[in-house]
Amino acid sequence: MIAALGKPTIAISIGDPAGIGPEVVTKALSSCEVRDLANWIIVGDRAAIEKTCRSCGIDATSIRAEVRQSMAIRDRAQYQFGELSAECGKAALGYVGIATEMCMKGEAQAMVTGPLSKEAVTMSGLSFSGHTEYIAELCGAEESRMMLSNKTLRVVHVSTHLSLRKAVEVSTARILRTIELGNEAMQLLGYERPRIAVCGLNPHAGEHGLFGDEEALRITPAIEAARSKEVLVDGPHSPDTIFLRAARGEYDMVVAMYHDQGHIAMKLIDFEHTVNVTLGIPIIRTSVDHGTAFDIAGMNKADAQNMIAAMTTAVGMAARKLERRPPRND
Image 1: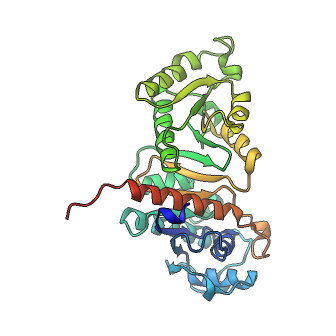
Image 2: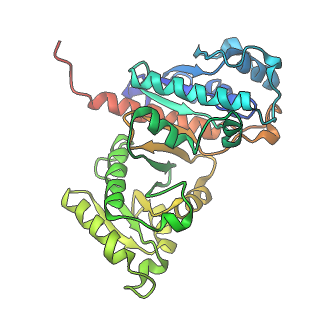
């Protein structure tokens, strides 16, 4: 189905060269599941790619993808697999910047990001709180959201990388915008009118004010405002049951109030195939939902299924976005 929608150009940043990012990228591109779905451009230095291919027994010349280099890693001996390095952290962030710029310029219709290490980036002296926030800043987007998606369910988060104390200070405007962004993303995923459920913040969604009034004061008004815009949404629902109901087919997407409320459910449902999708930015960006796994880097042990899922999701979203683009009047 996806191949029939078109063949977009998609940039893939390899993540931290010392982690498993280059391995899952090269393994995915060697897979018949995705190699012919798009025009792939690997954003990452050739020396790092060749080093990974050697460790995994992959013929680098057989990978059907252009390589866009930053020349941060010029020699295979410049770093070691599994070791935190300021040099690799800086290189990984550079790859993200190049891929983002390609999308902003229209050279690619989507980007897929491999895992990088926040610690390694910080070691390089750069300020960094996360992929999503960094890409949003590069795009000039004032706000962004994280969606997790797999074959069973999609979850979009009102807040992510905040302390729980700050995350519970939700506003009606932010909840409404999250619902709207989730609805738009679901349409790019092929759902014409997605069925959306909104979580409560408190146990049992507040139990009619017994355990808190955020549902009545902030969440319900956002749901009502979204409904007035013809979004198919309801709630707030008790967080301890709504994910099960959605996973069984009652809803297509759930709006979670904070990071762990959504992440725990999604990773339990299908960790290997859950993809991170960034919403609220002018480009399409998907990512693996795992880390650098330095402990197995360079050992040919990394599973590429999550990267394959991220790449497949990017292809589908990019192809549908191209289909919806209005015709040019030349």
